[in-house]
Image (tube, rainbow, N blue to C red; front, side, top):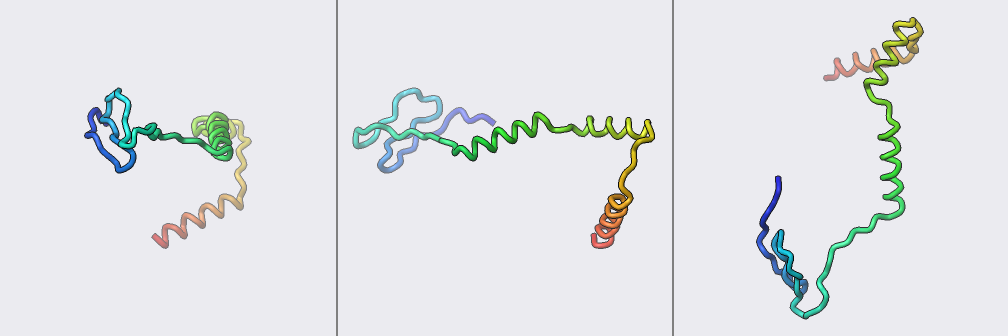
Length: 99
């Protein structure tokens, strides 16, 4: 959805906020410099963004995992942990009984 027009709004002490697409400078009632919005990210937030990008770029996709499992089954080298299989089966059984 794209908003192309917005009615002008006057906020007390801030002056008039222009409609979307209006290129004229906003003015304040006191004749002072207009307030502009600004966002600054902390170093921790910037680091989280970098980590998310690294994880996303280096993430193993479902297709990659499926191909690896197919190759292991074909080569007869796939050996899941019996404990992990039992845990999964029991948790699915419990979920079915409770649901």
